[in-house]
Amino acid sequence: MSAKICFMKIGAKGIMVYWHRVVLFLCLATFCSVAGADSIVFVNGDRLTGTIGQLVDGKLTFESELAGTLTINIANIATFSSDEAIDLHLEDGSILSEQVAASEPNHIAVGPGQRIEFRRIVSINPPPKAKPKWTGDISAGYTSTAGNTSTDAINFSGSMKKRTEKDRKTISGDFARGRQENPSTGKKTKTEDWWRTKAKYDYFFTKKMYGYLDGRYETDDIAQLDRRVILGTGAGYQWIESEAMNFSTEAGLAYMLEKYGNSTGSSDEISVQLGYNFDKKLGNGIEFIHDLTYYPSTKDFADYYLTSTAELRANFSKTMFTNLKAILNYDATPAQGQHSTDTKYIWGIGWSF
Image 1 (cartoon, rainbow, N blue to C red):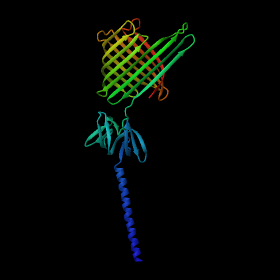
Image 2: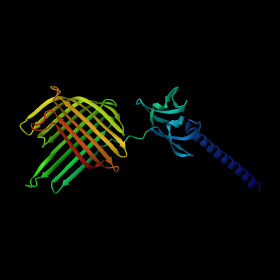
Image 3: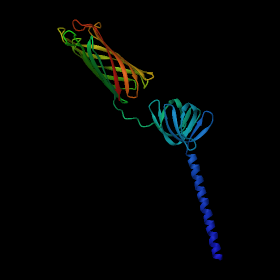
Image 4: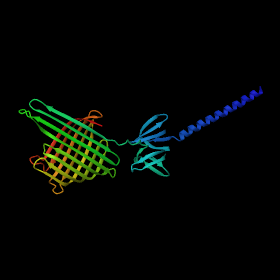
C-alpha cells in the first residue's frame, strides 16, 4: 500500500514538472513571436504588430494576426521596424536588404546611425517584375455604297511594341485601298491604293535618354509614289513615360530615297530628322495618340517632307476598341501633277493584345 502511494506521489510530481515545462515553452514561444514581429507606428500613436509584406505605389501590405491582411497608405505611418531583413528599393536605384528599426516620424533607421526618409523609398519587397512581352493592336474597316454611286474601300492598321528596362522595339503598318465604279461603263477605278510600314529600335542609356534607329517604307499609287525609303538615326529624350501619358522628342539624321511612277524620276538625299511622340488617356476609355516627324533637306531646308498621325481611340472593352485615324503627309517636291498635301482618314474596329 505504501509503495503504491509513493508511486502516485512520484507520478504527480513528474506530471507537475512536465506541465511547468510546457507552460514555460509556450510563454517563451509567445514572447519570441511578439519580439520578432514587425511593428508599425501610426501617425496617431497607435501601434500594430505583424509581418511587413510589400510597399508598392505608396501602399504597404501588412499581415496582422488580429486584423488580417491590411493595405495601409504610407502617409498614415509614422515609422516601422522589422527584425527580419527586408528589401528596400530607393529612388537612386540602390537596393538594401537590412533589418530596420523605428526612428523619428517619416523615417526608419538602417544600420548604425543611418536614417532613411520615406520619400526616398520607392518600394519594399516588390513582386518580381513581369517578363517583358510584345503588346499591340490590329484594326480594320470597310465601307461600301451602292445606287447612284458604287464604291468600296478597305483599310487595315496594326502595331506592336516591346519595352524592357534597356530598350524598346516598335513595328507598325497601315494599308488602304478603295475603288469607284463608273456608272456608264461599269469599269472600276482606284480611288486610293497605298501602304506604309515602320520599324524602330530605341536603346536607353539612362532612364530618359536613348539612341534610336528607325526605318520607313511607303508607297502610294494615286500620288504616283512608287516608293519612299527612309533610314534614320539619332537621339531621343523620354520626358514622360507612364500608363496615363507618354511624351518623347527626337533629333537626328536620315537618308531618304524617293522614286516616282511618272516622269518625275527619283531622288535621294540626307536630311535632318526631328519629331515627337505623344499619347494620353483622356478618361472613360478614350485615348489620344499623336506623332510628327519632319525631314528638311540638309541642302535646302525649303525642300522637306513631313508626316504626322493623329488617332482618337475609344475602348468599349478590355480588348476591343473603335478608332478614327488621320494621316497627314506633306512633300514640298511631290511627283509632277500631284499636290504637296495628302491627308488620309481611316475608321476601324480593333482588337488589342
